[in-house]
Image (cartoon, rainbow, N blue to C red; front, side, top):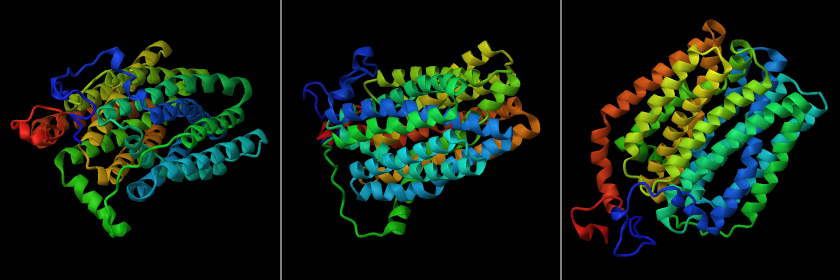
Length: 444
């Protein structure tokens, strides 16, 4: 069945429905039992994940007072994604995603509990932090492509796929709003060790949810091709198609020059705004408010039509927010600007994810989403190293400014080629019933 006609009245296809469905359509993907379980489990686990991310950054900076080591810590967490994500994508297209996801979630839980034990016994060192960050990076390299591809296995009606992706962003950024604020308060009250312990325990919720699911695995095409030839096939497919290539390149650029602002947040909170861990928590939480706003906006849409234009606008807003933040020296103003940066960042990333999942072939979904994972997470560690070195040399504010300028330039370049990309995308949207077809027979 085609996306445009699945689960709908034959007299009213998706081409006749408005793009914006309103607030009452935001939660429609939750009518699927498997997705409801996943959503609830992730909601609890992701709060802990964001708490740990703040705690690690604060712990590294408290122990070392070094922007460079902050960058190295971020590099260790994200670098494995660049190497291992394609392999994860290969297995996501071949193996049972449900079982794979349970395994990687259990591995992430073990990492958090070990971090907690080392910190609570006061035996933690910076090199142990980096080693455990590297281990978690390996886990994340498999988790992200598998989890992104697994959404399809939980949604029986493909009309709800874009809504499910947007809801993923909603729960991710709800946790991003709550987690850092809780972490900031907990670090000040009981220290980083308890934050790691709570994160480790939070994985129990998502593992229970996964075990309770009965997902219907999508049919896989039989293929005798090996790992290398399969990866080459996926790479050629993605980069041989201009819209996918352009999306991945813009995401990679923003991840390299814009996303590392999160690595520098402890420096900005402590040295520029003269705050403490509470200040850091509020800043990251404010970014979560903006990101949540963007995710809700996307979830309220009933169609992917028009999303291509949103992508460069969102990247530009992100860049403007970073530049404005570089001039701020007040906590209240910085907090407001973090809302802007969070909105622009997640709107661009979630919109790109949605359109990618819409246009990609099912049998190559895992491999394409592994490239998306590389672009969004694999490039970030190099950006973290560059940002750390720049911050040590010219300061965090000027580093923010340079990153913002590059994001704006990338958005303008993407917008320039948008009309040509629409020409490539329109036949796919016509085939899937997203836009009217010139020949009604094409939608059968």
